[in-house]
Image 1: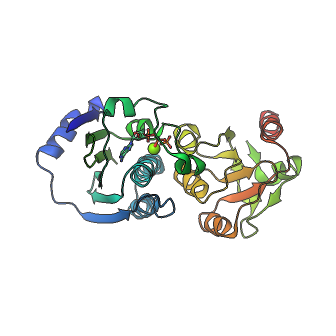
Image 2: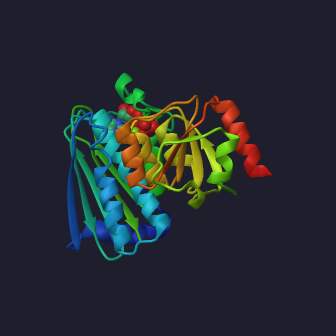
Image 3: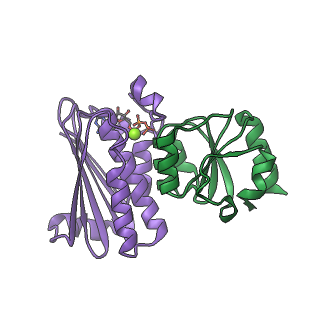
Amino acid sequence: MNEFWHIEPRFEAAVKGYFAQPPQAEVELEFPVPEKDFNTAGNGASETKNLLKRLGVDSDTLRRIAVAAYEAEINVAAHSKGGIMKCLIYDDLIHIRFQDEGPGIADIDQAMIPGYSTADELVREMGFGAGLGLPNIKKNSDALHILSSANNPTTVELLIFF
Amino acid sequence: MINLKDLMPLIEATNHTPALDPAEVDIKGGYVCDMLSDVMGSAKTGQAWITIMRHLNVIAVASMTGIPTVIFAKGITPDANVIDKATEESIVLLSSPFETFKLAGIVYKALSS
Ligand SMILES: Nc1ncnc2c1ncn2[C@@H]1O[C@H](COP(=O)(O)OP(=O)(O)OP(=O)(O)O)[C@@H](O)[C@H]1O
Ligand SMILES: [Mg+2]
């Protein structure tokens, strides 16, 4: 498996501490993300945003969470055989994990390049395929971790602090 | 900044979301693109989004990005399910008969004056 990490320098210690020993989440949510279903994709981002809004998370942070989660959901729907989105919500952060059923990303560094896309005709018709989703996820997350390789499932997980 | 109600006659707008009041929306700028990830990456909260895309995804993108109004160019008209979703999310949907270039020019001018 190939691995990609991006951590905002000021959150380095907090992120490493979190992954070294993930604590018990306050709230856990799970959403299915079916293949090529562009209406269901987005439900997870939308419901998570609404819940966090009720919990008092500020609007800029909400926007970053919504955009990162929506992009990642769309990627699972657009590029994989489907998967699940799982949210772990704590007092001071959210951890969102996307696990799909493959076919995986052969070269993650290449996939991260703005403009790189393998989106098919259907995905492009829906308005996706600019090759900007992964860069958007990186830009909006405090930590991003991708685990994948060709013919394998992809795991995309991100942390955003409140 | 311009109030959406004042912008509407300049672009000869049709309002598809009559349940929402355009007078309650102030536009802080505009963004023009049909690629949804580009909009999520670069459009800013409070901007009007000009596009010819009319899928349901447009509403999701506008909602995630904090866009209060989507203006469809070339008289493009959204389907009923798109209108319902936009109404639910408080996103005003307008159509203008003008092409994107002219439409963006009018909105730009209105915002600069
Ligand atoms: N979950 C995934 N499974 C397999 N491949 C993926 C997955 N997510 C991304 N990719 C690959 O990485 C590429 C880049 O993804 P990115 O989200 O940046 O762009 P895109 O989805 O093609 O277009 P956009 O996000 O701008 O609509 C995709 O085209 C695809 O080849
Ligand atoms: Mg994408």
